[in-house]
Length: 217
Image 1: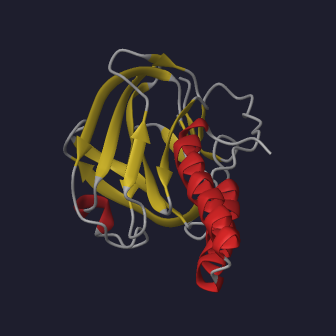
Image 2: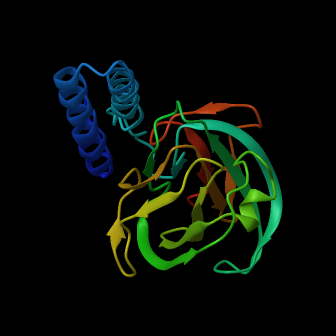
């Protein structure tokens, strides 16, 4: 099983404590410490599962906008995006539970034109209010079909957003750019001329599921 690079620090930390507790517990014969060792062993196995990074097959269509994350579509709404696009656009919101793959993919290739991190609250990520209130990173892209944007938002459990994208960077569709640790929300702000192909309640796979297509004309 392939593990995302962002997960290695957490895995190493949990593994260290697990091994230390196991050694101390069995050396001392302390039942309570041995019990805690087993709890940490279960936590380590869960972290291995959480930070999995399965291989994904990108769509072949050059005008396909792919899902940035695994999860369930919880909202499709027309909103005013005021930070980067500064216009009315369609927002697709995806909720990631702690059991979903959390590696994030660039929805559509182009040049990174905007990266903004904002501190905030940690409301449950499936709530609409989480889009504006929660801690997030918003990325704006210049693409061959115009500007578009996508967002990583922290959730009730998630406390760390990782985004490796930098201003001026050229990235292709499906480029792995980061992760949100332990439950979160991802959003895509579709450009004008994009035809939506999904509906609320759909389950998506990051880098594979096509959420919209851009009119190449």
